[in-house]
Amino acid sequence: MGNHSDGMDEQEPMSYGIFALLNAISVLVIACPCALGLAAPTAIMVGTGLAARFGILVKGGGATMEAASRIDVVAFDKTGTLTIGKPAVTDSYQTESMPGEFNTWLDACVYELESQSSHPLATAMCTYIRENRPDAVSAPHELLEHTELPGRGMHGTVQMPEEYAQALGWPAVTRARLLVGKDSWVKEEGCRMEVPIETRIRWADSGLTSVTVALAQESADTGCALSSFALTDQVRPEARDVVAKLRKRGIDVWMISGDHPAAANAIAQQLGITNVMAGVLPEQKSETVRMLQQRGVGQETEADMAKCDANETGVGGWMQKWLKVTRRQRKKRPFARVAMVGDGVNDAPALAQADVGISVGSGTAAAMETAPVLLMRSSLYSLLTFLDMSRIVFRRVKLNFIWASMYNVVCIPIAAGILYPAVDRGLPPVIAGLLMIASSLTVMVSSLSLKFYREPKH
Image (cartoon, rainbow, N blue to C red; front, side, top):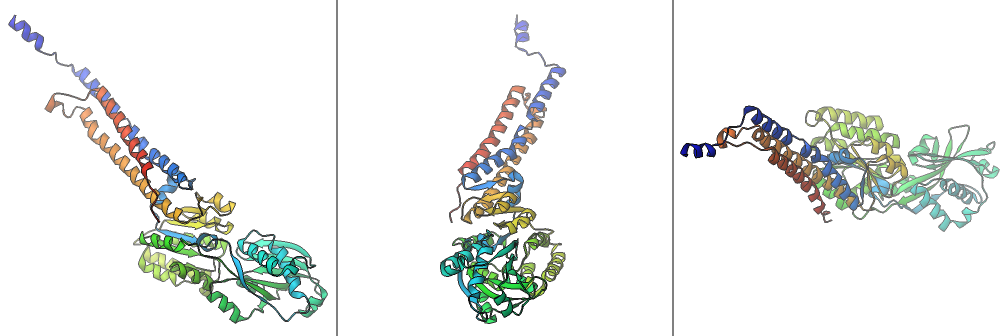
C-alpha cells in the first residue's frame, strides 16, 4: 500500500515532444510584434489629433512630426508672417515736373492696375488712393493690359495722352508701359529715378517698404519713375518673443525677404534676428533654403553668413560664399534640418524645399496647399507649440519602442525555457498570451497619455 500511494504522488514526466511544442507556442505568442507595430502609429495618431485641438493641421503625418522634432533652423518670410500682413501707406512722393492733372491721371492708372492684384501692398495702395485722392478713382484713363510679376510688381499698358507724352519727350508715343513695384525692378527696366535719393534713404532707414511707379516706352528700355509710395506693416506683437524662445532652444533663426535690405534689416533689428537675406526673388527662396540645409549648423558659419547681402554682392556672390562656408562646415555637421514659415504665393517653392514647410492660417491657397503644416491660429506661438509637441510625441515613440523591445528581449528566452533548469517551470502559452496583451496595452496607454499634454505658457 505504501508503494502504491508513493506512485500516485509522483507526476509523470512530460515527453520531450510536448515540452518542445509548448515552448514553441509560447515563443511564437511572445514574439508577436503587436507592441512594436503599435509603438509609432498610436503615438503619432494621438499627436496629430492633439495638434488639431490646438489649431495645428499636420497634413504630413509622422514624417513631418519626426522632422519637426529635430529642427536646426527656422526661416521666416517677412510680410504676413513676422508682420501682421496689413500694410498701410504712410508717405508718398509725386513729381512736380509734369503739367496739368498728370498726377491724378497717373493715380487713376495705378489704382486700376493695383486693384487687379491680391497682394497686401497693392490693397494698401488702393485704399490710400481711394481715401486720400478720391478724384483719381473716377479720373478718365485707359488701362489696356495688365500682368502680375511675382516678387517684382505689376506691369500694365496704358493709353498715353498726347500732352503727357510730349512733356516726357515722347511726342510719337501713344501707348506706354506702366510699372508699379520694387525699385530694383524699375531700374532693371531702364527707368531713371525721379524720386529724390534723400527720400528713399529716409524711408529705408525707417524700415518702410517703397513701391515705385514708373512709365516707360514700349519700343525702348527707357522711362522714368514719377511717383512712389512708402508703406509700413506692423510687426506681430508675439514675433520677438517667439524668435527669442527659438534661439533659447538652440535653433538658428533666419529672415528671408524680397524687400530692400535696409527695410528688412530694420524689421529684423526690432525682432532680434541677426541672420537676414534681403532682396531675394521668389524663385531664389527655394535655393536659399537649400543652401541653409547644406551648410549645417555652427556658430562660426553663422557670423560669416550674416555678412552676405544679396543686393551688394549679387545673388551669385552670396551663394558662392555659402558654398565655401558649406565645405568648411560639412566636416562638423553634414546638413541642417530647416523649417520654412511663410504665407504667400512667393513662398510656395521654399515651403516645398524645406524639411518642414509651415503656412500661417492667413496665407494664400498656394502656400496652404504646399505646406504640410498649417497654423490655423493667427499667433506665431502655435509654431512653438508644434515644435514642442513634435519633440514630445517622438520621445514617446522612442519610449514605446524601448518598452516593446525590452519585452521581447526578456520574455522570448523565458518562453524558450531558459529558466526551466532552475525553477523546473516553463512559460505556459496562456501566460505568454496574457503578457503579449499586457505589452500592447502598455504601449497604447503610453501613447494615450499624450492627451495630458498642455500647451506651453507664453
